[in-house]
Length: 404
Image 1 (cartoon, rainbow, N blue to C red):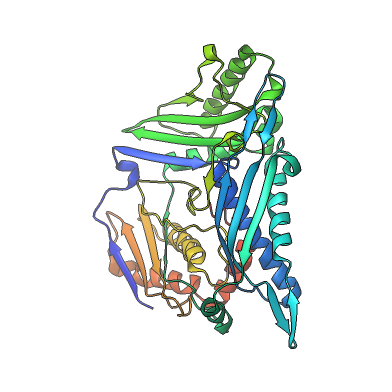
Image 2: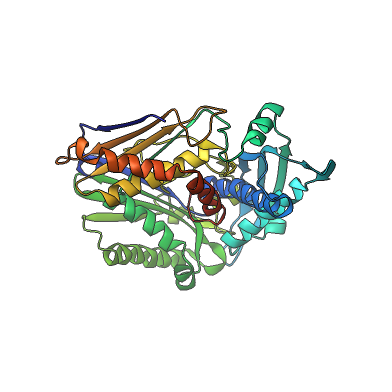
């Protein structure tokens, strides 16, 4: 394994004149379909482990959400056409034990996993009537299955791909991430039950001034007229400002909420179910957040769809998480670093702990690379250790990482 450690001759993002940060929340169509793909992978992995003692080959990283049709009304509207969720990919549909073929109910597992994920996420979405689910999952190619099955102690990479991550988050990035988490928390839904799950937070920092643009799908059954909706918007705006003050966000800021509203025309962001997916907003696996939980155009990012890939050998998932862990450990354990970027590149068919390259890039005004090379290499070797990789797979299954 080749490790290259270098310094970047650039300013940290917090010193850039312009910073743009986005978070697509739990009920955003892109987040929904990512969650659906990942739920299927988790469910299949757990089934394989329980029935066969190991995770078998699968990748369910292609998904499409086709928005439905709905008509909101004050006091409660109706869903006219269901949201369609289609996941596609490859999975082991039959396993051989002692020469016998044992069928795996892949389609049933997939549909049940998606339903359970939707029920965990939404309060006002009737999964049985508002959603139609299709699972188009077939056996993988013989070449990829054999690559997966050849793995002994260390899995072989089933793709030539790369993972990218960085540390730490800037103040703006932390604020965007924590704000969406707060607005979609159980605590906040108890306080403002009319705020749906489809929340998107965008922040533009220009110099030291920030502008937050928040889109939040309100739920129609809680309102009898437009005045009540506008009063609720003021409540949420004040809640956002109070929250940013509570987390000690120190930059001057303004907040705008549901800016497309035209109240005089009754063109306001009301939904029946709490998501724009009910009325024609579509989603695609891989278009949601990166492994940081954010979309960050000021940063190096992978465009890989992490959701749905198997957590054993698919470097499109594993290397992004490993890069995230390496970056954060380097930043936390070595003083004097402003930013860390980690890039890891695999080669298909080669053990995943032997990447083609691990490239660590640092921004620091004081450190000499010679003084930290040994420590950085040690962190990388620990995160790519055989036992650590096995634990990482289980951590992903247990939901330790947000992934998107």
